[in-house]
Amino acid sequence: MLLENKTAVIYGGGGSIGGAMADAFAAEGARVFLAGRTPAKLETVADRIRTAGGQVETAVVDALDAAAVNDHVDAVVEKTGSVDISVNLITMEGIFQPLSDISTTDFVAGIGKGLTTQLITTKAAARHMVKQESGVLLFFGGSDHANTTAGMGNVQIGFDAVEALRKQWAVELAPHGIRTVTLLTGGIIDTFPDIPEMEGARQGIIGASPLKRAATMADVGSVAAFVASEKGRSITSTQVNISFGACYG
Image (cartoon, rainbow, N blue to C red):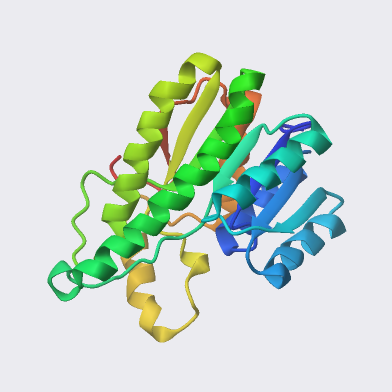
């Protein structure tokens, strides 16, 4: 198995994308620690993994609370001996509107939340990965340099900001054997609400792909597991495009 004897921490592990990564990591042999603020959502994912025979534990952690995050990571390392994979799927407070319609306060607050939680969780994992001289930090969303979609508000800008943060971490952590990789996505359509209003967005993502396809949650999990494994050890300091060519990173 790709991730046998590896320890993975997933913030936002009760969400759709976090759950997809958790499923894939556990299926490949990783011991998965799900962190989030909603116990019921975490346990739903954990129950699914346990039923499939995987190893998983959950913890209620506010990823905006640095002390809580550090305590949690320390407890994971004390229990397992390492933290090999860390991924943060906490979403920013995204606003899909024209920039001219968004208040300055709301614009800044949404992006600030995303950057803050990413900085906190990455610092916590990096403390241990530097000592280990190994580890993989995964990010999600990425920077689409050819973005031509209007009405994205602060969402793509926020992803761009997180990608800039990831690039800086890559420079600072590479000397310690730590890999940093972003999964670049144009949108995961099976996470969208099944309502008529979302059909246009769904078809837009499919239509933007040269293959006329869109990535699914299963695709996200499969690629994440490969990138985090030794099979993907040559991949670092970059984005991995999982948009079926819809994004140009």
